[in-house]
Image (cartoon, rainbow, N blue to C red; front, side, top):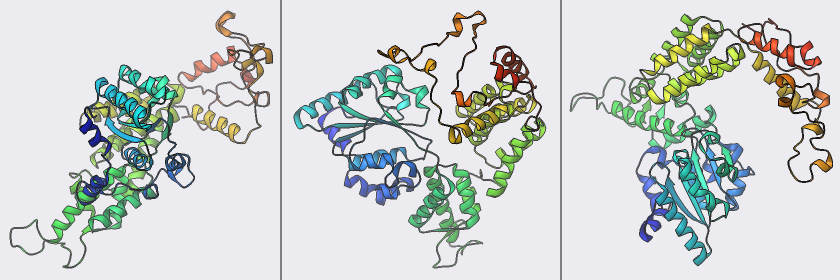
Length: 474
């Protein structure tokens, strides 16, 4: 972050016309193709399509303090750069990786001086904002509260875990999603055009599959594979003065990226199968674990890793499976899967294969239940299509002045004051009182959960809470 007048000027001019020209003619492909307008943004249409909320705020220069939360390559920094183009405020970029409290205070002091002297506001963009510890975040809070600065933070981590609640409550949270296949296909098309090369359809499909929703990763692979395709096309792999290499493109034709070029660009870590087989194999992995076959689960896991699969993709699938197919039959399953996913981030391959293998074996040998998945579906159906249901009066917030005068909280019974820590009372809207969502199975820990529900549930709940062994369980 800037520490003097000249450094401040340089920082606020980071996105100047000269910088844009430099990026347009040099630098990595991902930087050269960074969108220069909201219309050029690929993906995130729920935020930037015409009429979408964030686009409206950006175009009207009304963006308030915000957190951009999304995976790598989803467009967080791109949106920050576009905010800089549209705002009349001074835009100060920084990174929580390199900045400390001293630098933050310097920016705040300059923002205060600027507002007093010129009336201009300040937008402070902090990349990797989750890297700020709680004390550093506390320095920002008063400035955000009084409107001295507009804070735009970008993070790949869950902000509810990594950011102070007061800071988060004063910011709008914008969730960015990984780019879908159609969006990645457009990114790849732009990359190929910028590099002046073509690509075989199966190479494009494989590239989209391995990019995992990351536009920057996709463009990086295009750039490297294009170099290799041009090298192959000119016969540069052979001895000096040799003719075109085997498979070289005819003179005058554009270089054409093949799957082999893409594999070499990734150091050989490319799916040996096509995109269809990629999805078939992850389906086989999930179904093997769901079917309680640890050996089959290990086989498909190793098959995918050896083919170059991103271990984070496997880890994410295991975390989902832990709740979807094991559920509360073994509540430890989610902890084991989440720990394996975290270990993948900390350790990386090849050692992280041990952590994934442990999770696969644990999940495969755990008792199975899909009752949480079924319960979630039933609850969603009632919310989407059920009767409009108000919060019962006795459950409404009674802490603010005047709430008691309108009956809020009247009749509520505090369970901790009752024998056994439980009291029978209505917790759902009357229209949904007999709608049962969660029915525990007879497997694993859910058998004990069923016993507790029978002992402590309402009469209507107890009648529907018998342990079940429906076809949905395994």
